[in-house]
Image (cartoon, rainbow, N blue to C red; front, top):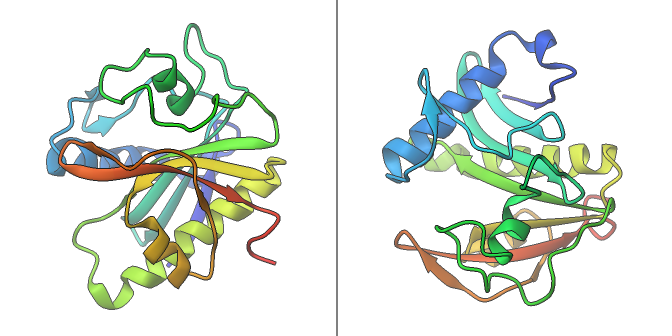
Length: 195
C-alpha cells in the first residue's frame, strides 16, 4: 500500500494515478452517494481542482483505496476560493452557509481538506490502516506546503475514528445533515499531531 501526493507539477511522474483518483472519486461521490457533481470521461471534478490544490491517493497496484484533496485557503480561481469559504458566502447551493462557527480564514497557514473518501469495498480488517495512511500523508503533504492547520468537512463520527488514529481535532461548526449523512467542519492543529 502506497500514499502519493499529486500536484500539477508532479503528476507526469505518476502515470495515470490522478486520472484513477478522479475516477475513484466519481465512484464514491456520484455512483455511491448519488451526488449531482460534474463528471467527464468517468472522472468527477469541480471548480476547486486547480493547480493550487494537491491530491492524495492511497493506492495498491492500479486500485485506489482512498483519496483527499488539499487546497490553500488563499486559493482563488475566478469567483471561487475554497469550498468551505464559498459555502459560507452562500455560493454553493448544496452546502449550508452556517457550517462554520467563525469567518472562514484566508491564511497561508490554513489549508482545506475536501473530497475525502475511502473506497466502500475496503475490508474492515484493513480499513483502519487505509485511514491512517491517508491521514498521515495528508498531514505530511500539508506541512510540506507550510500549513499549520487543516480545516475540513468530515462525517460527524470523526472524533471516534480520528482518536483511534492518535490524532486530535476540534469542532469548527455545527453537526449538519447533508444528503442523509451527518457532517461537521473540524479544525486540526498540525503542530499538535504527528510528532
